[in-house]
Structure formats: C-alpha cells, structure tokens
Image (cartoon, rainbow, N blue to C red; front, side, top):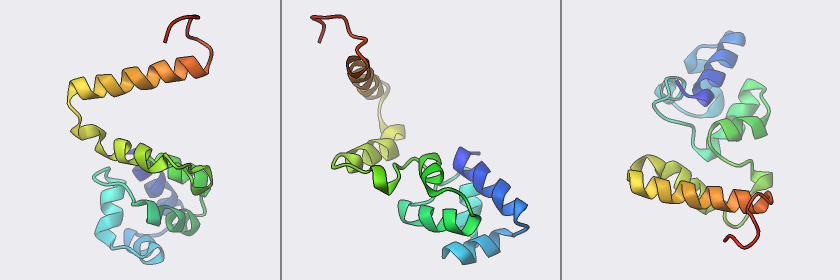
Length: 119
C-alpha cells in the first residue's frame, strides 16, 4: 500500500464512508478509489485537491503524498520533475544511478557541502 493510499483509506474509514461514497464526492469510480487504496495507482494531479476537500485533509500534504508539488510551489521545471517522478520505474539501473548522482551533487552544492574547487 502506498502512503497516499493508506492516508485515503484511513480517513475514509474515519468518516464512515464506503469507497463508493468517496468516489462520488471526488468524481471518480469506486474501482479508482480501490486502486488508490491498494497502491495499484495514485490519484491524478487534478483529483488531489478534490480528494483533499472531500476528506477534509490539507491539500499540500496530500499533493506531496501523491507525488506532486502543491500548485503554489510549482515552477517552470515542475512538469519535468513530475515526468521523471512518474517514469522512474521505467529507468534502467544505470539511468537511475545517473539521475541520483546528479541530483545528489546539486543538492550538496546548494547546501555548501561540496569542497571548494569540486564541481
């Protein structure tokens, strides 16, 4: 089960709703809610805000659990981030290592953790 799926299921059950009720409130099918809760799929970005509203959860938190930056934190490169995030399972091990290495290098540089003279 994914974090988003677990959060959705727990909150839905706290509210005493079946999957059908949540699906109706969000505007999706019951099977879609079932897939979210079992970690077989995640909600699409356009469903996350409605899902948060329906469940009475904070939208920013739910966006992050679903793997999206909240809309107010979006930048011109957000689409690239979401595309990489969505396709990470399709990367080869070597491609994944390249991405991880480059991201780690950049993070260390931004945090001032890279020794002087090292790119």
